[in-house]
Structures are given as structure tokens and as C-alpha cells.
Image (cartoon, rainbow, N blue to C red; front, side, top):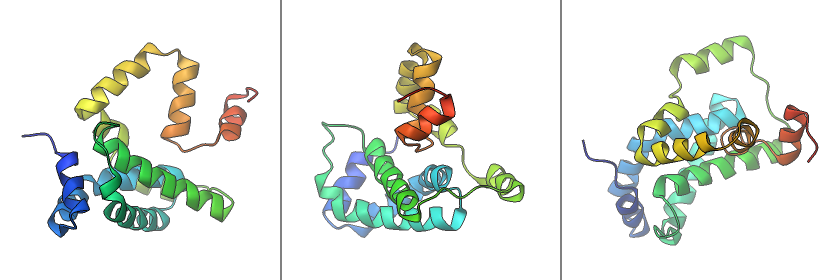
Amino acid sequence: MEPFDYASALEGCARRDPASLRRLYDHEAGFLLAVALRIVRRRDVAADVLHDAIIDIWERAGTFDSSRGAGRAWITSIVRHRALKYIRVAGRETDLDAAAATEIADDTPDPFAALAASQDGTRLHGCLAQLGAERRAVILLAYVDGLSQSEIAERLGTPL
């Protein structure tokens, strides 16, 4: 199986090719929904975040520059920023109840597993493994869980 060509899909989106957007969506929707869900903690809100992010990706695809980074990282950052914007606007993070946590655990694709399976993920995991535990935790809390600097400091019990 050939690796997914993010640059080609994003170039197609920039040309306003709906088939390219469909290909990108079909390939990444599960992973991107999991990224949003990890931040906003509500499936309905995560679906809205994903919808808005897909529109952003469609509208901004022409600004993607493969020389500056990977396509998957670019689209993931759009979803992440959309989710963080929701949290800021909502003014709070919604707590998970036990039933919702079980539902999420049962049917949400694990973003770490998907990332580890990709070539970029393998390199990223290698880089993260070289960091000390505290630095690695800070990076993961910021970029995977979507926590702010003050939330990370509070969670780790360290000053900013």
C-alpha cells in the first residue's frame, strides 16, 4: 500500500478539486476527529470542529508549502487550532463523565497509533524518545492534549 500523498491532495484542494478534498477527508477524518475530541472532550463539538477545519483546509490549501512541513502536520494543526479556539470561546473544557469516556475509548481511533504507523510518526517518536520525560510530557500536553502553558504548569506542578 502506497503512503498517502498529502501534498498532492492539498494541491488538488488549492485547485478546487472536490475529489481531492474527498480523498483527504476519507483518509484523515477519523484521525482528525480523534485529535479534536481529545481537546474538546465532546463528540458533537469535535464533529463541528472537524467540519469547520475541513472548510479552512479547503479555503487555505493554496497556502500550504510542502518545503515548510508535512501535509499531515499542516492539516492537524488546523484542527488543533480550531479546537483550541472553541475551548477559549466556550471558556471552559467540558469534563468527561464515565459513560462518555467509555464510548470514546471504544470507538475513537487512537491518534498515537495512527501517528506511530506513519513514516512521520516514526521519526517524531524517535525525536520524542530522545527527550527527558518532563520535556516530552510538556510537548505532548501542549500539542496532543491542547493545554495552554498555564494549564501544563498547573498539571505538572511547576512554575511557568
